[in-house]
Image (cartoon, rainbow, N blue to C red; front, side, top):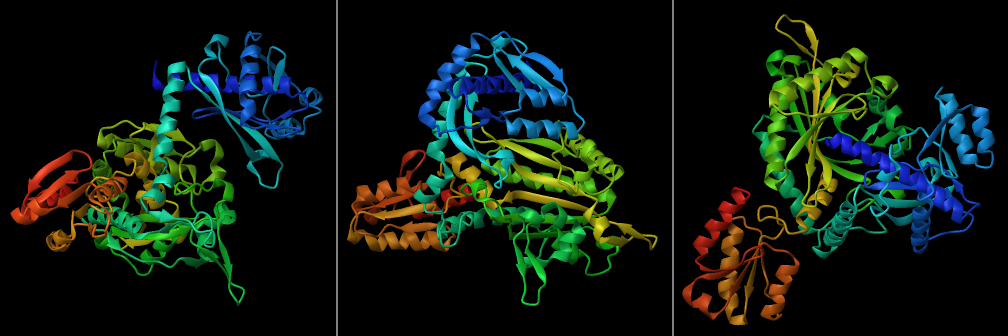
Length: 583
C-alpha cells in the first residue's frame, strides 16, 4: 500500500474512533454535550462539556465502554438533512447549533452519520469496513482542557485524547517511542546539561541562555555563517522595533496584528516589536539605486523576533515568544532565481548533513480557492510556483506538493527531516517572494537603462534557533558530537600533585581553540568521571603518576570507552581532525 493511501486509511480509522469515543461518553455521562472530534497525527481527540469533571483515571472505563459499543456497530450510515432538521435533532446542544449555522453560511451540505444508537454532525471520512477499527490498536491517552474553537474568550471544554494505529504492534512501538522521547525531553536535558533556564520574573516563553547554551547557539550560527560567506552573503543589522507603517505597507499588520507586541511612545506613535525581519531588509535594499551589475544583493542577519503567543501554546524551546532567526534575503533578477536557490539548497544540505539528517523537500503552495489569504495575484503565484517546480526538477528529486501551506507572500520549499526517534520535523525553508518587491517597489536598472523589479528570496537555515535546538537536543539525547558540544574535553587530575601537568594540557588545548574544562575540584576520581558522563562530554583525560612521568594522557571517550595513552600532540591532532571534518 502506498504511503498516502495508508495515511488516508489511518485518518479514517482515527476519525471513526473519535465517533466511538463520543458515543461511549454519552452513554456513560448522558448529560454531556459533545462538540467536535477530528483525527490528528497520532490518533484522535474529542471535546466535551461535562457537567462534572473527569480525569485520566476515568479513561479505562471509557475505553471499556468503547469496545462494548463497537460490537453493536455495523458501519456509518450517511444522511443529508436540512438546516431545520439538523437544528431540531441537536436542539439541546448549542455547540452543534453553532456549527450548523457556520455550515449554512458557507453554503455547504449538512450531513449526519449514524452508527448504532449514535448520530453526529459530520462531513464524513470514516472506515469503509467497520472491522478496520482494531480495538487492540487504540488507547485513550489523557484528559486536557481546551477552549471551544480555540478561543480563550469561549468556554473551557474537556478534551479526551487517544492514540490509534492500524495494528497493536504499531501502537506498542509508538508508546515505546513516547517513553524514549520523555527521557530525551529537551526541557529536562536543558536543565540537566545547564543549557538554558526560564525565570518567572522574565516571563514564560522567554528562555535565558547559560554560557554552555550560548556556546551551542554560537557554534551552530557560526557554521551557518561560514557556509553563507562562501556564497557572497553580507551581514546586516536591524532594530528590534519599527513603526507600524512598515508592516502596514508589507501586509503583515493586517495579517498578524493580533500576534504583535505593540509599543505606544510618549508622543502617541505606535511601534511594534518585529515579528519578522524581511520588511526591514527591503529597506536596506531600498536605500539606493542599483545597477544590474550589482545584483544580486545578499543580506544575512541572526537576530531576535517577538510574537505574542498565548500562554497555553508555549512549550519549552519548541514554542517561545522570543525567537532567534538566522535570516537571509536575496534580491535578484528573475534569471538568477534558480542559481541563487541552488546555492541556498547546497548550504542547507551541507549544514544538515553534519547533523546526520536526510532531508526530504516539500513544495508548499497557495490555495487557489482561498486567494484572500495571500498577497498578490493568481498569475504572480503561478509564476513563482512554477519556478520552484523547476528548482525541484533541477535537483533531480521529487517533492510532495502541499496545497495551502505557502507563506502568505509566496510559495516555499520546506525541508523535512526525521530524527533518531523517527519523528518528522520541518527544518529549513526557501521561500520565493514576488509580492514584497512589488509592495515596496524594489527595482534595479537593467542593461537598457530601464527599471525592473527584483525577486526576493527568503532563506532560513535553522529558522528558529530555539526550535531547532529543541529538535537536536532530543535527537542526540544531549550527547552532542565533538564539533558541536559546548564542552569538548574534560581534564581530570587524580591528585593535587598532578595539577601542574593537567594545567599544561589544559592551556595547550585551550590555545588551540578546543573547548576544554579542568576538573580541579577536590572530588574523587570516580565522582569527576561520573560528572563528565552526566554532562555527556565527548572526551575526558585522566592524569596520574604514569601520565606525568611519560608526558602522555589517558584518553576516554563517551561513545567508545577507554582509548589508551597518547601524546599531547597526537591528542590535539585527533581532536582537530574530528572537529574540522565534523566526524
